[in-house]
Length: 328
Image (tube, rainbow, N blue to C red; front, top):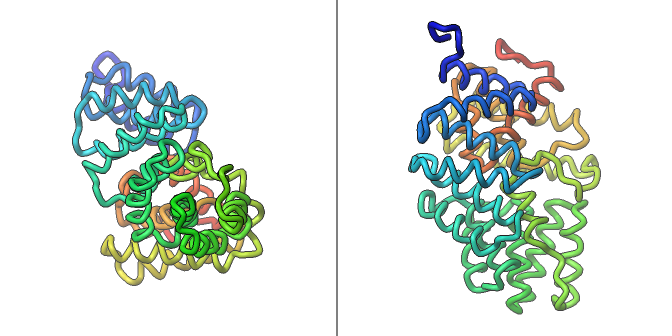
């Protein structure tokens, strides 16, 4: 507190961080708005507030989210450049401004050229939104090389290849996408569309896919009950989780603990959301349990998902498994 009893910028940011961790939306928004108002323009605290306000409103009010992102981007913090431009790209795609969205993803890639989610979203925009199939194929192949087990990435590449007339490869990939997510209605429509020779009426839209890859959503309305293919789903998440934890330098004991948490959680939950969000949430949960000190934001950025989604899923993991930071 300040000498006058008013909360300092640090107090407000810490209060916002606690609210984010607890998932209390009303308190999150109220505290972030106050922090954005009080923090010096262009400061790290102001950037923190505007970024999280943008994530908060990304789905229900993308225009408002874009305004917050513009303030954050204008602050010119290169360390956050890729994430801010990618979020702006997602906002603009949801608003239907596809050319602007594509420029945003190109800017994001200039900061982080190897990020598969940026390549995927740019490639999908070029395919479905802007009809640049050559450019789309390039970016979607880069994404597929890095994330061959992500059903949306596989499906997007299949769609682009089918439009380019490469039907044999497209059919193989469409079948792979359906195998990765057997109850995904849009993937089944994609497979049937490619089987029919890819007629003019296409089964994929920009907003439908962009809302699932890279958004804050932790649910998927077009996916039915996944209880009948838990084994395949668990293998997909486990592969992503182990790869990321090995790359992050985790000890074998930490990785084994994460595998146990993942298996226990999937065994008790009928619907567990997106693979990338779940893997990130398991890693964050294990980091808390074992006192490893990794931040939620760091893990979310590494998996290409939002902090809010990781926090929501991690809280559900801890509640479901009755976990606490002192032990499992």
